[in-house]
Image (cartoon, rainbow, N blue to C red):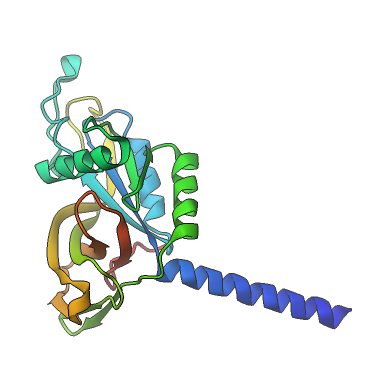
Length: 240
C-alpha cells in the first residue's frame, strides 16, 4: 500500500510538472490599458506587476492618452509620460471587436485579445486567464538569443509576428491630476510594437533589446484579433 501511495504521488507530481511546463510554453497574453492620470488605475498596475512574474502569462501595460487633458479640480491635469495615441487606438479596436463599441475605460485588461475585464478585478481576470488556458491553441512561439540578436520561429502559426518593446519597470512621481503626490510603479510599459514578418516564412531575426528594456513576441492577425501565441524574449520576464 505504501509503495502504491508513493507511485501515485510521483505520478501526480509528474502530471503537475508537465501541466506547469505546458502553461509556460503557451502563456496567455494579458494587456492592461491604464493611465497615471486615473485614480482607480494604481491597483490594476500593481496586479499587472504580479502577473508579469508568472510563467503562464505575458503581461503588457499600455498607457492611453485620453486622460492627459482631463482636469481634476484644483489638482489640475497630468500628462502621462508613457501615454500614446497607439495605445488608445489599440484599446478602442479591441472594444469594438469584443464589446461592439469604441467607448473605453480604465483600468481595463484584455486577455488574449478575446475577453475583457476591469483591470483591478482580479477574480474576473483570473477566470478569463483560466478559460483561455483551457481553450489555448497548440501554436507556440520560440524565441532564443544568438549573440546580439533574437531568433524567432513559430511553426504552424498562421499570423504575422509582432515585437512589443517595453520598459521593464519604472517609478513615476505624479505631481498633478487625480494621483497627485503618489509614486506609481509601472511594469512592462509598452513603448513600441513592430511587425517582424509572417510566422510561416521561417526563422526571423531581430536585435536584442537594450539594457533596462524587454520585449515580447506575439502572433496576431490584426490589432483587434485574438492573440494566437505569445512569448517573452530571453531575459525579459520579471523575476518572481
